[in-house]
Image (spheres, rainbow, N blue to C red):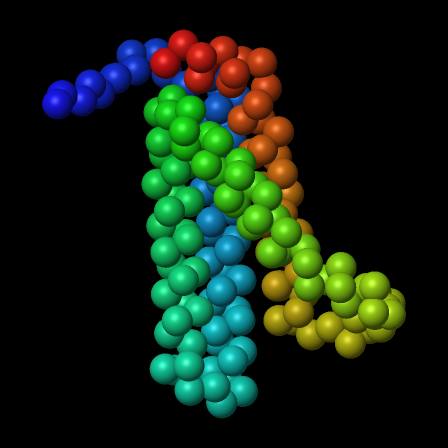
Length: 153
């Protein structure tokens, strides 16, 4: 059984390149958020061993996202659909679920702002940029020039 590897000679169009860069940015924001969360938990006395499974899972997700973003830029349509389905759908839900539940339970944005410290502001800013990067990447991955690029593979 032989497998054929297609090597693309044409560069990714700007829309695909930008989508890949947005995915990499989302990974960077996610890593920053993980560092903030882990640092806070350690500061609060959580044992390191208790954090290893969560940190390991996040590291695996980040590594997978980087791999998929690079494959996306190289023209792998399967990477585009994998990113859209996993991180685009489930990842976005995981990013916005907690704040939405908090608001639905009667949380007040005004109270949250009034009680926010530097850590809360850094996390909130990063999370907002993280969500915007994911949504931007999703939109760009399915623009007409991107669709043509992936069809030509």
